[in-house]
Length: 252
Image 1 (cartoon, rainbow, N blue to C red):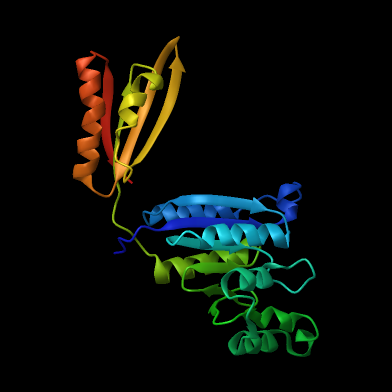
Image 2 (image 1 turned 45 degrees about the horizontal axis):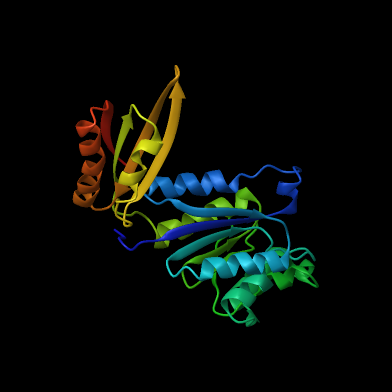
């Protein structure tokens, strides 16, 4: 069971997603698989096929020492497939090489048609490891066991996501969450929110129904005692001020 704090990012590359020619299926698949294992997204980016933008996003994620990234798209052999070079620029100081195993897989799959273009899909950032492609054997790849690069086709990428998660990030310690709905405005609780430990996840959702304001407070973390201690700040305030609330606790 993994207990290290990990921030999961997804980068979904494809101008065709942004102009409406295709619908994204990557985020929902990855997000569901993360939640099954007790993980959560830190952020998700949907970007066009732009090398400079990719470089900025990759470096932003790289700067997070606890980051794990799943990148979708742009690892093919056409002129608009920039991901392999962008990954090398961000993560291996531009160092690339023909990966022997990837090259063999592509040659076995396409024979003489591997040249002159498809073979370049085996030109990867140095020290890359491979992800199996169950559709056509052209692999995805990953770096440092935490930066994963997959094709833009869900039929290929989804099995790679599962391979990576099952191998390196199978499950985490369950997160403990407590939720209450208070019969007041979220504005009334701001002073309490400011006192909550930064080690916990706090979210506040306002509700307005039948001309009455309510606030849904959610507090979660891996340390149950710390969650309960901080949650008492809210319940004590509500009791002292005779504000009605409904309380429940759940685990993620």
